[in-house]
Image 1 (tube, rainbow, N blue to C red):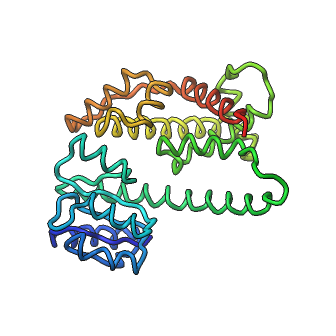
Image 2 (cartoon, rainbow, N blue to C red):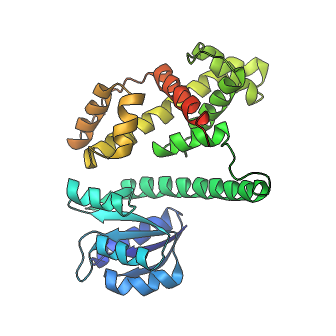
Length: 297
């Protein structure tokens, strides 16, 4: 990954660069102390990600993003800010910012966010390449093509920020299995049957079937917890965020979301035990997949 850092604090720029280099997260191809000085450098180097401070002289973070977008820059932005309020976050969302790094800079937080954004970037690029290839091949045959079950499921999981989680692949296989059954009922079979179907899709050794099914359950549980954390984080920054409003009450008991939000807001050192209803999450995912897959082109 290729990063460009904009921050009027030299110490912050140095720390971010050190975290990226030592964590082998990519290369820092440039840096600047203000948005004004960064504009031409970014347009000429075209980095994958721009880490940009919100409060800066001359042009602030939002104004810099607006200028770069007007000039045709298509890279992604990660906002760095010490002060976070709903108005600022709402404006940042409108400009395409989806991730925030808080000041004072924390090495663990920066490493985690950059790793997650890089994973999502690679997966999105792969999906884009696949879609472009399919569109090119099919363009001579038809104007529109119904998306695959995998594409529909990945789009939903991507909205919740868990497309990079291992358990997401298991959930895709589950939804493909259920769609192939062509069951008129939208109700799920027992989870045990779904775990077994995924294990068979992965060509699991029959002698290790129980172990593999348990691993599948654990991977899915971790992915669902990650989705809950991502949605709770969105809700803290902006309670009216469309992804939060749509997915949080559908896929989770809203009480669990609120508990996780309170924990994040108070910066509790002891994480509460989150109750995860795997069957409810998969049931809603199946209904959403059915609905989107059957929508007319």
